[in-house]
Image (cartoon, rainbow, N blue to C red):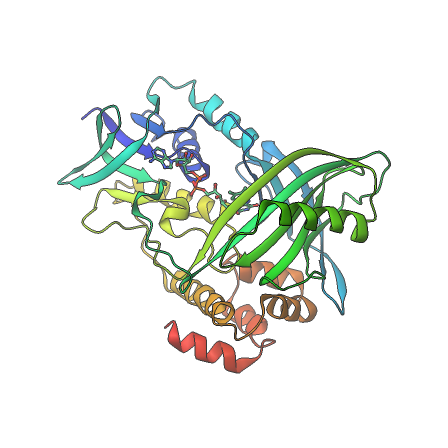
Length: 380
Ligand SMILES: Cc1cc2nc3c(=O)[nH]c(=O)nc-3n(C[C@H](O)[C@H](O)[C@H](O)COP(=O)(O)OP(=O)(O)OC[C@H]3O[C@@H](n4cnc5c(N)ncnc54)[C@H](O)[C@@H]3O)c2cc1C
């Protein structure tokens, strides 16, 4: 067999895994094929996430915030974090950083090919592309080939348009990241703005919705223009960069396992690492790929089993999403209640799957019990 591992899809999860393999002395000489249909040459997304201390990609963190802000109609709160930092990484910096590092290794091959099928056989897996067929002991897949069926009954879309704007005069506080500003019309569903200043004159402003359908292009533009003018009170600015994204928030079963696919391991969104209740993915991908490395080093099957806590977090996510999907409560009300009543470290630990059971209870106890009980039972 030509390859030890094939990484199918070189986005966030594929390249995180590749980087971890190459950083590990035991795995760095393995023969690895990385396949993607696209060249990763565009700044197609900005990743934000929170973590304690320095992470693996610290060198390419564009900016980090020690204070986060939450706003709703009747309250506004700034939270100074003690342990966590909210961090931003530009997609292009990440792609360049990992691919540049990998190019130093003769044992890593990159292929620009469209994958059509991935099949597992006894002891190996096979990837068929428009051009050829490749074989490896394990295939780590982040393409959408094994996505479950999503529909409006089991899924919401998190869709957003973001603008990086530059002002002529200093207007932003670069120490404060505005995580959610819910002072907007909720006519389409949960809707908020996200404002992340990277300097006194530059910020990413993102209009985000959790709804069944995406909006017309013009609606994002109008919402951003109005917010920048009315809430940020900025008249004179230049748009440096725009991004648009759709992230699935789904009750459908995204699984790291593939039916009859022992040698295929789903990673990233495909593997269920996009948190159903928030869309955050980056930090969960980091934990999963770290676990895969540990297992590969021990020569064990690289599919980390779900722990009891993993299952609990999945259940919390599904419950919260069910509450919103079934219109029992509005997203705005849920997030506003949590941010009004609990401290930021507890909230971030809970939303980042790092909380203690006591912290889980602390967060959940501030929410109305009945809607969560009904949805929770349904999602058991
Ligand atoms: C604009 C945007 C902003 C986001 N911001 C955040 C954020 O701030 N924080 C956060 O945690 N998450 C964020 N997300 C969500 C999530 O982190 C990203 O979607 C992340 O890139 C998911 O990683 P992934 O590896 O699963 O998928 P991707 O990064 O999309 O990688 C999948 C790769 O597979 C390739 N591929 C797909 N099909 C095929 C095929 N048939 N053949 C060959 N190659 C194929 C694609 O070209 C792609 O490179 C954002 C998403 C978007 C779209």
